[in-house]
Image (cartoon, rainbow, N blue to C red; front, side, top):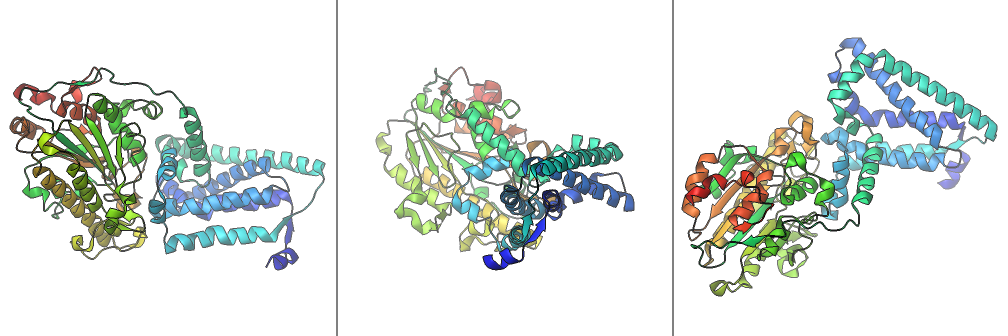
Amino acid sequence: MLAFISKNKISLPLALFNGLVACWLAGFTNLSFYRNISQLSSYQGMSNYLFVFVTFILLSSFYFFVLQLLNWRRTAKPLSIILVIMTGMTSYFVNQLGVEVSTAQIENVAQTDLHETLDLLSFPFLLWCLLTVVLPVVVLSFLQIQPQSFKKVILTKVASLVVALAVMGGGLFSFYSQYAPIFREHRQLKAQISPMNVLSSGTSYIRKQFKHANKPLVAYGQDAHVVIPATQRQPKILVLVVGETARAQNFSLDGYSKNTNPELSKLDILNFNNVSSCGTQTSVSVPCMFSGMPRKDYDEGLASHREGLLDIVQRAGYQVTWIDNNSGCKGTCTRIKNYISPKDDPRYQKWCDHGECRDGILIDALTDYLKTLDMKNLKQNQLIVLHQMGSHGPAYYKRYPAEFKKFTPICETNNIQNCDHQALINTYDNTIVYTDHILASTIDLLKQQPVASSMLYLSDHGESTGESSLYLHGTPYMVAPKEQTHIPMLLWFSQNWSERHHIYQCLSHYKDSAWSQDNLFPTVLGLLNVQTQVYDQKLDMLSSCKGQI
């Protein structure tokens, strides 16, 4: 094969080679970008086609300009192959799933685990890579760059750079009245342009990692202590369930037409139907909700090296335990004493398939953990966090056992953009039915304990399932649809939780109020009777009920 390629190589000048690569990078792999910019323009018919064509010329000229600056005879092919691979692999998710490659998405990829990554692989993805990665790389292998004198190379580069700038200037000037408002109002469009999106977002992510690395830990809530109410005779347990990718609009508790909450609907719970997330992906929402910073003031850099909710509760005297069936706690539980990963424990492998486990594993792990506590003589208050796999996509069909396949037909593939939309919704709804079962089972387990207990559940973010041609999550918050930001949240108390009756009676008046993940931090502190100067009473969901408790 190598001998055949060597004998049949086509010799090209460096400038022509760079021009061909630039046109490829700007072309077919950016179809979604061209489609969107076409829809946002004010032109119709041939004028719109011309506008899109000029946009292609502009993008090609920009890539050509960059390649002419960077590429030299010996480096041109390796660098071009890297760009082609990068473009082909990421453009599939942009074009087929509507994913925008932002800094947050790069962070999401960097923090995910192998099993979640494998769920993104599918036959259409491999076919796309064949067309946009393998074939172009094969073509590049047949091209050979002509040797030229250094003087001629420099003169050609200077002349071509001037021409590229002139083309870009002419194109921008011709349609400035279109480009200016489009990119001012729709800045997320740049996250759809491959490979610029990966290079820009990747560089931003790496710079951010270096900026935040090795910073000293900032103490927070050092004055935290528990004030035990006179009515509390013994320690209590709060189980905080952090859901994954569940959206409120598919909870029948929140008005969805299909019965996705058959078990919870029979229980005495408080459901809040107007709750929003801090972010549209786990790597943002989870640190944000535990940080004590409201979304509008959230500083990811500060949150990465400042103590949060779990540190404060542990300092106040609670035993804090994190039980994980996801890809970790995103730094929020780094300093707690008990971290349990049941998917790595041979005792729980009945829930797992090739390292990926269903959420029933959390119930088994919680059951075993509670057995280690002497409930009749419990000495220490407990905060236990369960981190679900929940409704994580795109392989929704893997998230629940066969007995929870309540809605059919289903989408039994991770190639969700090609599924019948109703089948896709059915599959997603089945994940919600299973989450309903997990939450009801948690409540049932807590009911069996002789101590006062409570469960608080909220999802980290929502999910798009084809609405407006968007799939999955991670869309920049400013433009994210409600499917990705409107999340479920509910609260349950055992009969022997002393303030139960008054809390239910009071909060039932506020179940339709606008809440968010901003309320988690102070509400948990309030529930656990933890006092500290960093507690913000205005954001505590229970603050309006304090006078009644």
